[in-house]
Image 1 (spheres, helix red, strand yellow):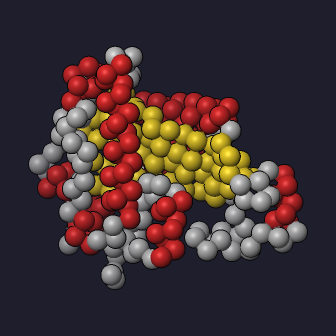
Image 2: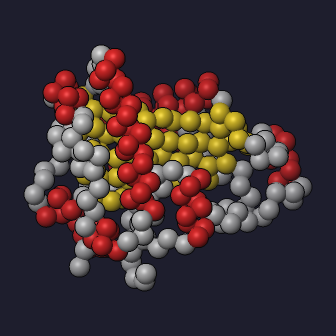
Amino acid sequence: MTGRYPILTAAAIALAALQPLAALAADTPHWVHYKLLNGSAALPKKVVVVPAGIRVYEMTAGGVKEEVPEWSAEAANNVLKSLSAALARNARLQEVKLPRLAAADAANLEEHKALYKLVVNTAASSGLEHKVRHFDYAIGPGLAALQRATGADAALIVHGRDYASTAGRKAKAVLGHIPLVNIFTGAAPELGYSFVHLGIVDLRTGDLLWMSSEYRDGASNLRNHEDANAIVEALFKWYPGIEEYRRAYVK
């Protein structure tokens, strides 16, 4: 496939597997549902933030990656605080707090978060021109009960990963024992990265109205509040980006 559309190479496929939810749009990092493009759906006004997991891993000199729960909790707290602050500054969106859910409703939400990840991975790795022009992915109306419980129009689902190197891995890189060029990212060498994905799902229809991702390598660290803020702010700079998306992909 040529032109201004997402191109899926073998390296990109591998990267998508290593970094779930990575949007591969060529000209923009965000995706917009066709109903927003043609005006048959309205932008949501109230959103409930649904955490789908912020995980922080430590990479050893041998390349082993192990989650550090305390770091994950710290990063998740930073990202959620940054999201709330960004929403407070955004005149288009109002945050509705996620209430304590009954066991059955909580289980249903977990199932739909898992379905959401599957759908987004499929969308981001499809590489199909017609899907970019007519972005129509959805997770079904199974979260309608959450809409009734919160009064929100949509769920904002956030997912993230952060990889930090041990001192031994950093020393190994300095000595040149880690390949200078990572075949997936082009980074040299791979000492870590931060990745955050946001998606907005219509709670009535299940349509994936909008999604975007931000990837940063090097010194970025989600446990640092300023870094988390910078990533979240970068993501919201593309919201809703309807006209930008139309100009880039819909001729």
